[in-house]
Image (cartoon, rainbow, N blue to C red; front, side, top):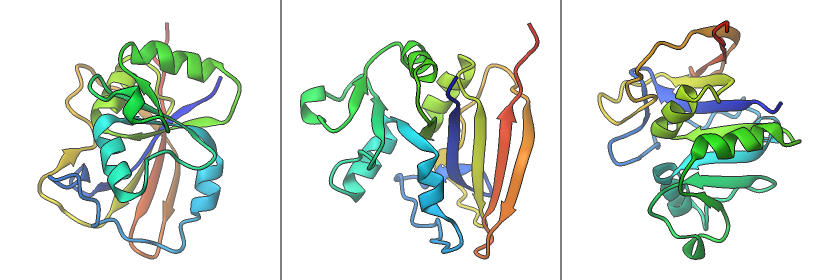
Length: 175
């Protein structure tokens, strides 16, 4: 079974983007091996807002060597042929992706998609690069959840920029 990993940068006060979706506060740290990071995945999942921010930043938001799925009820496939648009039943689609052969799946963002997949028990790991900044407002790492989810620390790493990577496995409740 492929793993779904929510891997994002967050401010120390828990925001993954500023109020306007900005992320210029995330430092470029040369010690972070982005090639190694990206090689772990062959599929990316993102919500509409994450996709739109990524698309503004580059021509299209698809990632090289990755199939990109965008979860949106409002975007039209004909306007975004570089990605697979999912309009409904996200848990079913992600469940099918997890069961298919391949590498791990990168849940890029955002917090609303993370919450819905976490509630459906489809997130296997959470990796947060804590950036040493307090934004005071913005888009939260995770909107309020109806229940607690236990995590088990699996790895930490500290970078010269002050970013601290915290990696957790999602603890599955015993049946």
